[in-house]
Length: 298
Length: 200
Image (cartoon, rainbow over all chains, first blue to last red; front, side):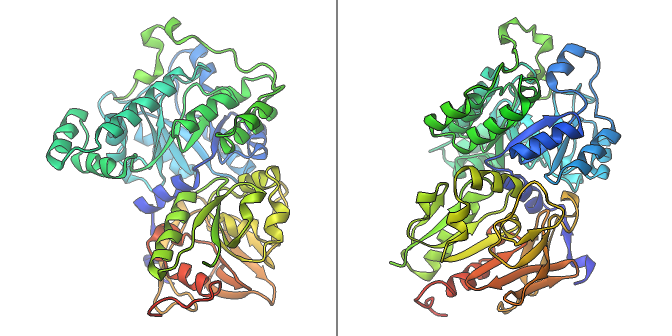
């Protein structure tokens, strides 16, 4: 087979990668040892970062892409896919992550944005991207820029699922409202959503986002993960919730099982037992607006 | 009615596999339900089991947790496995100490033989038993490096075997369920169903 007949980084390949993650748990890890615990527990991928969101929150300052050395270490430690975060709009961080062999890039509001006007032009990359969204318009703008997966923003590093629930319900409800609209109404709605008409029409027809939709931001227990799955998520990201809990290996396994059995309360009860303290958590209303990560990006 | 087709629904692109088989069944004008398989009881009445793409470590954890290992090993129907399915059905997975595969097919598999996601690709490849090249989508795909005499390779790339038959089973490194070409699904069902497909 001639090399020129092989096509890399097509939309089908990028979205296909995201589809293979469905029904899975993607876990934040800060070193090779944690990555091994995540893989053993049955994570479908790990997110390599220097500090989990809870620590980014307490450290303050500018949060940037992680040290490439640390990302490489994690890549060589596990056989599941490795994801890493770039700052919103920081396409050079994304280029670096792609050259390291990262399997999916998270253009993330958890890091300090590098551009207040433009997100990364994700179509220029061979590797797929995941982006956060709070509502349908934001999700479709990111998909239009080339995102292969959408996740709710939630409120990362709080251990409080309330914002992830809000964002998820908002997106679902906005999709339901598209039902029954004719094409001219959908085009009008697209202008209101500040999203491309063809994506709004596709979403209306399929009654779901055109790409895989995960939940993230504040998921801290097996019940939280199952809640997001019952609300229609294709899978979950768990950040601080695992390695800020008392028994990370046990918590990680329990969350994987909870996502697999999200509709079976008896199994959820069983896996939720004896996990020790989950992460402490933050009440959202006690967070001043400038400390809310979800408001980064647009 | 011929029985049911099950899709292992623990993780991965389950809905794509269900949609693809439903499409193929419509094309063959037969009445075969496609069902999700999560627990041993779901295997009842199956004539075929599809093992989708996803993460093989996760699959094996959940197969064992849900008590499916022996059920799948002892399954007498045909298995249609893609990507991670090629890994979990293998006799041996190279450099893998985290899990023992199911050992259904006499193969030694190399996971992620092509590299990382940026090396994932689509291409038209020749497949034995299919008239013109098949549009194959490889996503962090495995290959079979060694196969027993009971294995019939159907598609081979420089890295290894990417498509094979073993008894009723059809094992693929790529993803026909998302590539829009369902000829391999038909080929698989030709070996399972008693009735020939209309017009074939």
